[in-house]
Image (cartoon, rainbow, N blue to C red; front, side, top):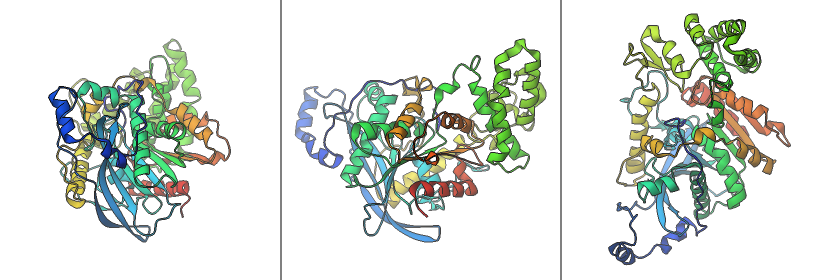
Length: 510
């Protein structure tokens, strides 16, 4: 998910010491008696007294996909995070799905992250690509719907083993230091990338998978993490990555800035608004259908935006075109000068029906709880409905099905992490690391996937980024794929099936 608070993190300088693997580190922990002595002397003032996590737990499971029966082992466990002095400061929980049978050294393993920051990996896990799924993200879904896991027809398990990672403060993952230290070590861009990269390294080392082909995937701010983690693994930890899959990535936040001066905010959001309008008209979304509005957005639209209000003819052209593409009331478009702010769009679109649209898919709606409020006091139709089913399903899976008997709260989406995150992510980008990672490995494959209707992370940002990117070798190894739907386009069965097909090409699977 995109930035919880749309504010975010500035990079901090912090280095994690290159200690031994997670499996070997446990022996380096001081004996309990020594820890108690340190506590008694006040030598560990930042220590937080929490019950220990249980040992890793596993269960045998089966799923079915593409006419195949897959037997696999699901494991829930944790890995420690240590500071530069070797002190354990956090514990990261992972969920791994490993195909049973003879071990194939060429079988890939994929590491998955969601975003926020503050989102657990449950959305990719139980929604998009894990072996089981729970229904969420579509029109009509309700928080009180049964949180029942069923086989996931979109899973990647036939092509790759998968490890879903919950950053500190999400899922059951936790910091072991106080709030100020947590902000320093976990809730900022650079430390976030470094410790999560190290978790990938430690899992590979602990499980003997360093020689396996390795892939990274992430959704939203997780998509922002993907190229930065990939490049850090390549150049700092010595782990080569065969491919990246970014799902609705928050790739280039600076494009959101200075909307009163820069045209880029309006340029990147007009095509998704048009896509939603086409869907409401019953049209089938396709690259051919979207070409006209895309060409306009990067052509005459930019020119007229830059002319501003001193050119009435330019304003009139804007209003006429934007009205036609969005389906909004012409009077509202004229008052807005053809510059349609996302929140206003979602409210005005359904104002006459007393409903509001979701920023993640503007055609998913709910009743507006405050229809006469001038500013609109609103949640989000998708966001409000997904926390309950994903939390209930994941906690039940971890504790009852797998048997990982943990104490504590599961944070599917932590607003506390979002509010504690150091401001500044809106001024940073991941495109630099994406370019460098691709240039460093001419064999790497990259898939960037978006839903047409997503206004939280508009697909047209990625289109513009890729169009400016130099790509050595096979030009097709960096691909943008678009699907009907929004941020969680995989909630639509046809879009999930098309996405799976595109991903199988990344893995080279049939």
